[in-house]
Image 1 (cartoon, helix red, strand yellow):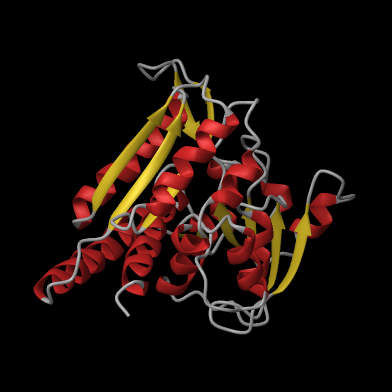
Image 2 (image 1 turned 90 degrees about the vertical axis):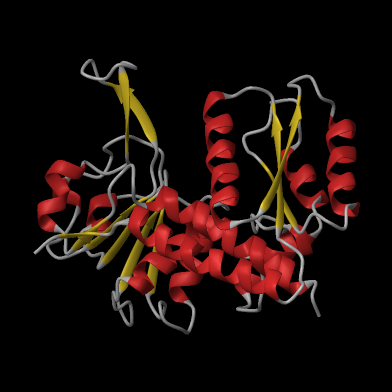
Length: 293
């Protein structure tokens, strides 16, 4: 029987825990966690994502700061803004919202963030520690997926996980976390990508299928085996005349046709997205707590 992996409900449970943790800090005379976000330009999707993060901070009792910069900002000016956040002792963690304008070197900017404030988990130091199973900030989306599997009680031990997509933000860290010696974990992992041959042969063997390929309805029912757990990371906007906006959000999975074959599946929206934000909040609390010692 198919069950929905409800990221919205799970994220609210995590936010309740975070709210309690913040109050406990204040009761002990400790500082309130402070998250900052750098937003360059006026990309509507990026503005919406940052807005969700600011609202989440308010719900759990964090301080938030939005640092807005024009699209015309130079590389050196953006690096200077990052250094200011690094040097500000009140800010526990911060993110630089991606994507950045074409004239900006994303990697140089991300590497300029102090690893101890890198609550997105994108700095090479955190990526390297993750690969060695050392304590670090995990990228928010993979961390959220692991939490979703864990809180739903889904057994991953010895299962075959197939990841569609090899990005450094989702696909690669997802593979590292699912293969690690722990729970959730201990999967045999296959990473598929744009050069993978006979793709459906791989996906049909998956006990756990993670779709993070960025193509609407790419995963069809013939690509999924009966009883699989399907995690849809995709966020795609497609035309829909029935909506006031003329479009709607959908995932990388053809949900209506794939869902009946699954044991568990995440919806879009309401699946991975809320868990990503909840995980970012968890990382921010950890960054704040790390400074208490």
